Length: 355
Image (tube, rainbow, N blue to C red; front, side, top):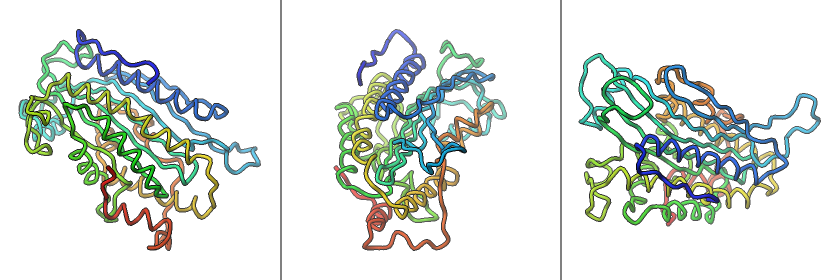
């Protein structure tokens, strides 16, 4: 990154994470704008949540103007969003009960809710060119506290954890792009926390459409509920893989390394593919794959479902992750074995190792 983020250990983790996601958001948006300087800038929309907290949604969209004779604007991106949320409030008791299964330190208060804090960043990028892949990224820090809901971090923390994901969803498979994306993620893991193999497998399981029997894309990483306690996805270990206990500071360093690796993992691929010639047939296939993206987001994934459960949710920011245009066909003939489209289908039906 152009200006490296320097954490302030004197601040509580919620403040450090807030500062980092603001820094990372600005870096991603300016990097994408620099890639296509003649395109409209991202819309930067600062918002305040009445129930507690704030955020900023940075969204790119360039639909055809009603008076325009051109059917398609000549922009690299079709739709993109880079959102941050720093919110606090009271979680409903039903949500708290769900979280207790992964966090024994959260007390059972019956029908009472508990204060929470979350700071996170989410980005979804939909390029216009079918040869350029869609990418998704999310990193977040969550706290459950006792007492009243405040944003200053003074209350006792009952439970905390980090979560995140990064996943590539191409319409047309280029092996060298897949290798680059996965290798950059692999290399972003810090020596103390070399969890790439476990997080890669977790990603293949999570971003899966059981009703289609296929993955959404070609994988990446996924993890959740990562803190100092033993974790079932890491052989029930609470160590960093080297025998040392996981720490909040060490995991924050890992989050920063993965976040800093986002643009190096994706921008070179976007540069390479964004101006390739393509046909209407290839555009049709791209929109069919985006239909799969929508199916996962609304039926299988937890992000939108959880976001809409939070009191005072900002719906526009939650649904930013959906594409502007998608397509469904009854019994489509596309994706047959032996075709370029079929090459992708083989991988989404049977995930492979890229590094």
